[in-house]
Length: 250
Image (cartoon, rainbow, N blue to C red):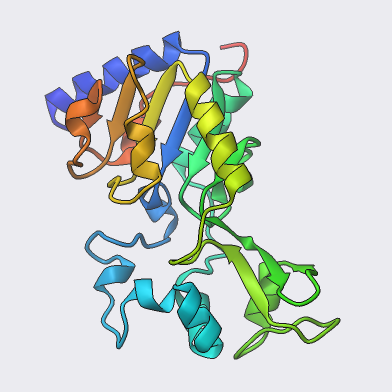
């Protein structure tokens, strides 16, 4: 690892040690080490050759007009139920148990933060683990989506099931966004990792750090690097593995 990056990680570790109200905002790069592809990097979903771009297939209008094609793509590319938490998920859960981390705000829908043990997680884009009948409202787990081919339907009323994930053309859940914003406002250390900050409202959080320390960790530069107290261009998992133990009693 480059000496400059090592020095930056030492500074990050100091900030973490001194903080008591950390809030972490994460993107797809948090889960790539768990085998879940991101969208925009090399090898991400936007680089997969196909007839239609992901943003079209994963739109509300496409879901409504072509549900079978939607679910074929969704099962193949967004359901990774066997994925396990990596070093980043585990470190964040550890910081929460130690009473240092207030919340995780995630753009991911994979549920890995909860699987690692995190309790306060604001899922801006929803979760693959929640699916709802559009007719009667009955809730289903993701196994139902995987257990059928074609379009999944409600066992009670035959209505169409929809994953409770935010598709293109849809609004974010207002209560989730409000909770995330309130947590971010209380942070004494703003950590942002594994995201290019190319979309809102996630990018908006980077503009709301004010005078508080804001650490941005991403493999590649972002448009917000100059606003950060510290911008570390390195693998997120490698950075987090060097922060140090923060379990209670240490």
